[in-house]
Length: 344
Length: 278
Image (cartoon, rainbow over all chains, first blue to last red):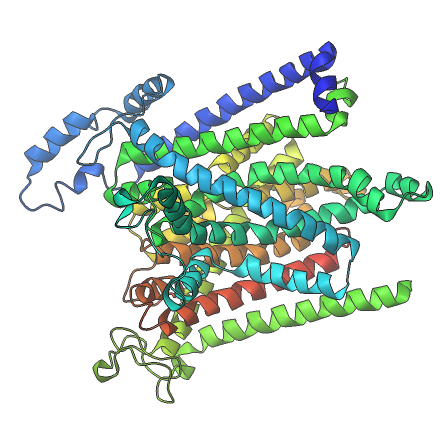
């Protein structure tokens, strides 16, 4: 609370913060523009076209049908015209209509799926942090002890574990052997007849295994990183000073070291967003969950141009949002960023 | 006390290195010698032995078409290693060249390259790989190229940082004074000095590429059946997971062990070369 108070009530700090944020937003817009360029050109220059599904692969359709489809989708115009057109519509938050048979707006379809994916990722990130921060601290403080070595071995196993195999194993063990959790879908067949409380319970039961897979995937990296940061912090002079003052090791670790060791972790959280979004494709397709990943997978299989590009741009927006959030948190947590850098 | 600590460190690092090296060598050998040591042809159907559990005849069991799992694992290993090496070679080449250029010139070229790196890092790269693969034909060459083209950013940053510090060293000034061309300085003086960290990243990169390839194959967008790859074997096993769990067990184990081996090797090499990071 104190940090917040200082932060918002000291005007020079505040203005510097706004300037920083402004720069960050400009950078974000630039990166976003680059992303639109890459995703548009890469996909449009690749051989094959969205009309393939309805024409080349359909023996009944001839060249006339193909040309008509290309006119409808505007695919016969020069690429740069298509790009500018798409970009202008993107600025108006219009991602176009899906090229699949229902041809609903891309944005609506994405927004339907987004809450599930983001929700699962947020929950699993929380779990990851809750578990890995204490584990990392413990490993660092008891460095090279038996427990630390065991954790290191587990971490290496966790790094090497393919998430889809872990999902299959969990399905085998909890779903099939023990009948403990349902192994696919978001709701049971009789979902509509359930009471409110049972409905929530049903969804929680369906989401347990996927969230477990996400969490175990993130645990290894996070606890390893936390350990490294903590080790580095513990070697700093101010920790030595705190110890020399005669503070208990508990106080030194919790009050002096932890806050500094957590700083790089914030950055790592921001950087882990693209991986999480990518991982959702696999996990959602295994557990048959109607999230963003499954939507993207379907779009990829159907060569749905507008949907693929919409997903790429949205994924990038999510990543950038994660980066910016991490940056703000970093600024809040690290007084050196707010106060120290007067020259920059 | 310090001496004991040193011994302890060295010992554990050595164990990591030995374990990693053994796994990597064993997997490579198994893949190379697959035609000799595989008990059966991986594509031959033993129609009277469909979905057989592990037995003395078929050590790791058979799949839905009666193909021997062990032989398919061995041949799948060739695919995984090949993908790992080729895609990492691609990403290392791009990353090293861009990184050296970026670090050595550090003018607008540096700015441009680093901004491209920023942009590429903001892509959910698995999304990008999937969309490109879906438009190209999902075959081995395309997969290797696409994985290589989407994973060079880390190497670029690493090599750039190394080059930035190497550039100020005296031997580079000496080479410049002696009239060496820029290409000569880059490839004969800077490149050899960045080799150690690059090799470490490459080792870890092989593990990443193997994981990506098997994820792609698992989604059906990677190596196409009937060619065996660990990923599509898992995909195959998923539909019969309740009756024939060995189909899903062994390919995953193979991925786990291989990736573990490369990670161990990379990490222990890093410990040797860069004692700051532990």
